[in-house]
Picture 1 (cartoon, rainbow, N blue to C red):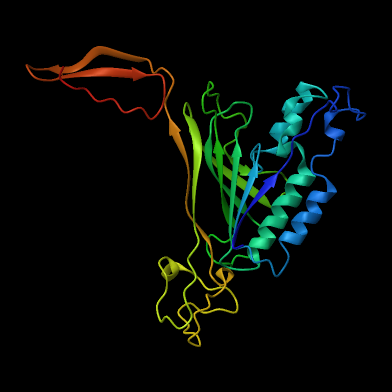
Picture 2 (picture 1 turned 135 degrees about the horizontal axis):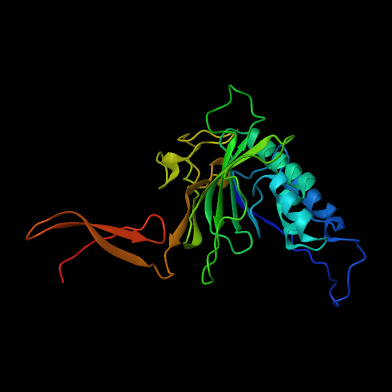
Length: 289
């Protein structure tokens, strides 16, 4: 399939299925990603992989923030702090997964990589950009980058972004960096639209709808005429792509507004007043009642 979704199961717990404590001395000693996952990932992302657009889903953002900031939180949180489930607390797994995904992306210029996850500790959502600084300087512009959509609470209270700073390297020895643009004070959800061109009939002399924007993979040329047979070309000859990906935020919580005092000229039809709101990016419109 030209478009695939990778579900990364990182659910881990300090308790077993029966509620008894696991033998690990603390949460940091527990396995975060099993060996079976890495074997499956390698078989999926091999050199001849037909995947063109890969979306990686995770409970929490894979490129979450500074590892040193997470380490400071863990030092104060104890052996079973929930922050042990963050990717930045699992440096080896985080670096290994990002490296394999970006290395897969680097093998073909038309491959796309997208990350989608929930937020951390009830924090707000974010539209983030993950950057691979290991790409050569002469690489195609934007090739060493991937978008990351982080969704905040949908019905619960929206907390602040939990991991400052908003931009920078994941770690001193990491080849990856991230830049977050939080949706502060907004409940949010992710919306992703995939576009897979329909295969055209051989000998038809025209492309099906959507194939005009397709980039042919190796072994196929868009617009080639066939031998007159009515057999359809394989969909894998055309590149699936992410047509749109964004985090949609909404202000559902109460917005407090203070109007006044008057700070400027007052006429029979206008006045300049000071308006204060408790949230950023609020548009105020004054209408005649």
